[in-house]
Image (cartoon, rainbow, N blue to C red; front, side):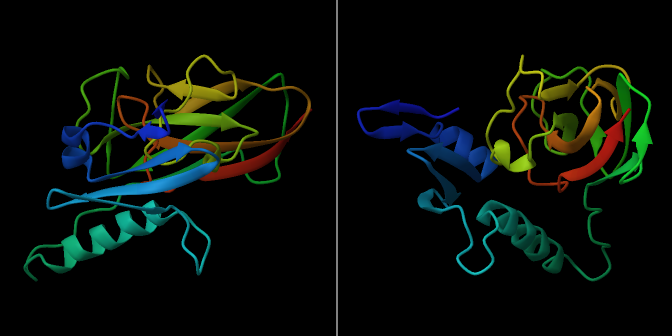
Length: 196
């Protein structure tokens, strides 16, 4: 989380940015995308003025396309990490008090246990209960100890039984690295279902 000192917001160290290239920094009611390119730093509003979505998502997509398009034609493009909620189905009714959410994760290695050294290509899941993925900006730490954010860094890395009250719930699955930093890829997925 960004720290504020006399009107400035700490976004991270130079070494952090050289390693990861970009991050979303929130402060003063705004989210700013900060980029490091060839040792130069740039900061812009993290909202596309045309489409309204976070620029860091676009940055990751462009970087992926640029990277794969510059590879020799004989080399197939790298598989893009993805996740899909396979159960429960959208609009399903499940018997409570627990609702099991199952996720199919592809093209990435799960981190177990969480807290391992951060390694590119490794991720683990978080299950957001009735809060959108946008409640934690890409590049920011997912809260720990808050029951709305359930960490999946132990056994059953892609499934979770969640304690849910009767009624309609939306579960959003978000990938993070070993330091619990929310990632733009794979794209978060949501399912809304009813607990009876």
